Image 1 (cartoon, rainbow, N blue to C red):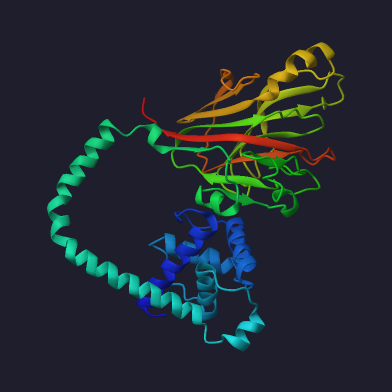
Image 2: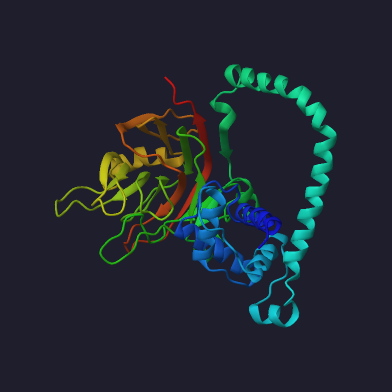
Length: 389
């Protein structure tokens, strides 16, 4: 592959990644992300690419110090171009019989070259103006950043009014471990995202691997942040139904993680205690570091108490969870009440050495046989903040 073709391949791979994950590539893909990427391409084009090759491509493209230059086959280039350009569905036999000349790779090259030539002409005509204005722009931006830009400028908010796949990708969301049957029910309630408490957990047990189905994820843009999610009328009723916020170092569940959830509990290690609806926060050091640690266990009410249930259950009409991260200190907060504007109350604060790259919203029931019930998410917000004092 010559230098020009390699440049075009780099642009093609970045375009394909952005189409799949809804954001620009910044880091090499993990094994899980590579498999998600390949499955998306297979679903749309009917053609396959090896996930190990995709992982190697991402390493080389994102790391300027990488050694050997990758040299993808023309069939791989054509498959990527088909995915990016939205080509009709096919398979390897049909392509070999009808399109063995790999037309979509050459079509992408043509579009790339035309775009580059057009940009070069524009750049040349604007060079003098840019040189003259450059210093003014830089100074203006520095002043603007110092005096005007605030954490509000990095705020992302989603009211889940549009949850079709195109809109969610455009908003930076991507789904992990999709359960097609239940995922297709996500819009069954207008202006809400509906997830079901499916079997799974981000920690393994003796018989099951870590997995959260229909886990909705997005990247975290800053080291310090505030995240909150609002639910609607969710009262878990069986072991171990829960929903909430998940922070992850990686999407394969091998790194450190933090989970904050509204949950149900009736297991007390053989001791006799009343069933609980609670706010739970759990941290984990990752794969190979033993069991997770429960750092918060705040009971909201006891379902077995008829008086408590009658009085307190309505407070779960509009529950909300919030996590605030400042350096290594985390605050975990909860709000309940019939009204939307109920105040958040701190559940616990603790320092934890983790730099999460992803934040997710989820509904699970652990590895139990309890029922898959719907959970309505009506609001999510992620706000980047300054880590300075």
